[in-house]
Amino acid sequence: MKLRALSLCVFACTACAFDIDDFLDRLDTALTISAFQDNLRARLSGTLDLEIYHFEQPAPGLIDSSIDTLFNPRL
Image (cartoon, rainbow, N blue to C red; front, side, top):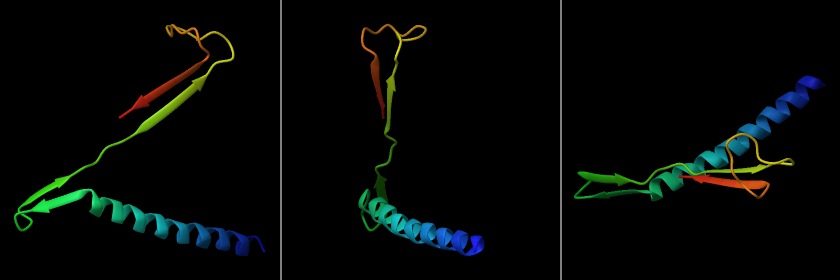
């Protein structure tokens, strides 16, 4: 019985992964531009990282802040 449940979970995760993979392939194609009969290609790529910290006590260490929630976006 446990083997069936595990097999079902693996199958469900694999099906979702294929949908996400297709979306990422379409996004990659949309962010790639070619010109001069594919002799010149440009591609836009990057990483976006968002971090939020919430301290219940005063901020630790060298963080000088009067608020207890910090937001740190990075590109």
